[in-house]
Image 1 (tube, rainbow, N blue to C red):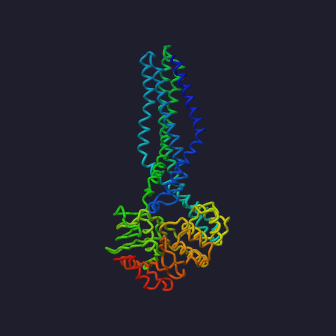
Image 2 (image 1 turned 90 degrees about the horizontal axis):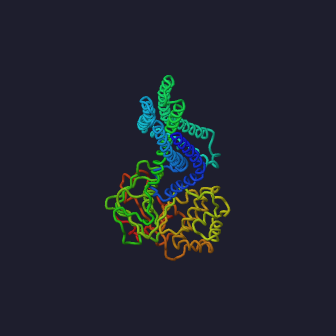
Image 3 (image 1 turned 60 degrees about the horizontal axis):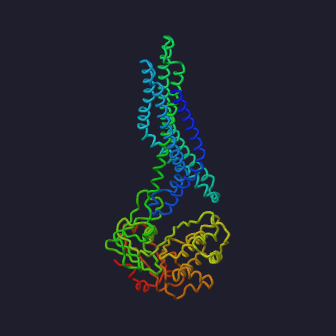
Amino acid sequence: WRMSVLLAIQLLSTFLLSWADRVQTVNRGRTGGTRQYHRWQLVSRMLMVEHQELCRTSGSRWYYDAMQNVESLTIDGYWHTFVVAQDCFALCLAMFAALLFFVGVGGAKVNSTALVAVMSMILVLPPSAIWIRWRRDRIWDMLMQRMQGEERWINTFTWLVHAVHGLYSFGPRERAWLEQRWLQESKLFVSKHVIARDMVNDSVWINRWLSTLSYLIVMYTGALLLIDHERKSMEGFKAANYVLLLKLSWDFQRYMTRLVTNITYMQKASVSIVRVKELLDVNVKQKMRLGITVSVPHTEFTDRIELHEVEYLLPSGHRGLASMAPLQMLPYASVIVPFQSLVLVRGAPMRVRATFLALVAQVVRPSKGTVLMPAAAWAVMLPEVPIGCPGVTVLEAFQIATMAPELALRLARALGLEPSDAIGLLSPGQLQAITLVRTMMRNPTVLVLMRPFSLMEPAMRRQLQWLLRAWQVGGAQRIADWLSDHPGTAQGTRTSSHTLVVTSEDMEGAGPAHASDVYLDLGPLLRSDVSSRSPTASVSPSAVSPSAAWESTSEVWAV
């Protein structure tokens, strides 16, 4: 009956191995779906994160975690968890079989041999666990450094791939520098990879040496007992018993080695899980909160944006905020940006004005002070460098902004663009124009712009200035009317319906000023040590309204 039990256990072990191989093969497709689900989680979170929080991490971090860490998470994490559970069950079966085989076998020597065999098998566990625990922090640190090194060369390579159509502008020295940079990053990654790999392999090999030592102890004690029984012609322990004892010990050590190996590899998955979790836990912008209210949760007014004693300091590790500078308003200073106006900002360095515009558009939050906006208002700010949707045509780019196909076609032709042209092949100025028009057609309450025409040709610049005037007067519907009329009709006398906040230089040559235009001078409102870091931007008198227009709208700011 003992042989029957051992045979059943062996068949069960073989079935488990066969089933595990089948699950591993079948689940490759399923883990592919799991990987894509986690990548979708990262993409969804990145699209919803506030700009200030998003700037704390680099784009390469999101890319690397989505490609590499999600892969490690699903393979080294999910799959090896199943394998560890399987190995634990197999270890219990092996120990039970060893105990069962020697129970009832007569003789003190046989029982002592069984005890030595079982103890040598079990005592492998504590040293292996202690070794893994002792090396855990060091392995964790090296795996993190390895991932950071790999992230660097992947970032450089992906940049080269995306900039492949502009590489002709690089000379031999620049190309050699790029190649040397990639080689240095690759060399750093390889050095960290070798150390991390060796440390992981050391943990595996320590367990293999311990398992081999345990197997030799069982082999030695069993051989002594078998020789003693054969010499004395004693019953109870035969050659078949010895072979089964070795088989049980070998199976136990094999499963033990697999268990430790999988636990070691799961450390890689744990590092990946932590890195992915850090990105998924980035502060998400609440969809229902459209206004930033630092000290006052609600606003009673509906016709303006207010900034009171605002101070903004660049956070540490501010990736993506290099175009901004610290901003500090004077004590008791306030700024009121009225709605349904063209607000031209001047009187401060360009980077300080960029910070002010970002605060108005809720792109960043103030370090101190209060920025109040009505809950029903919707502010949008465009980056200086245009961003286009990947893999779409000009016509599709307009339709993404919920434009009707006919209107999208008319807009593309009005801008002098071929509707079937790919976005990736357009010039930066054309891409800047498409981004600006798409944003206007979304009809935000407040449109904040920082150098929106910096990359455009003069003719397209004038055309977009007229379009901005038309949008500020009558919104997206006014632009649709402008397409069917002459450009000059956009300067009609109808009441303004939208708010446009832009630096004063960008509207030079846009035609005569409207009565609703507001000129906001930030110089008197800022601390001198901030506003004097660079020369104050000057505004040409021909591009702004007379001083009487400013006096008529003096309520725009008050100290």
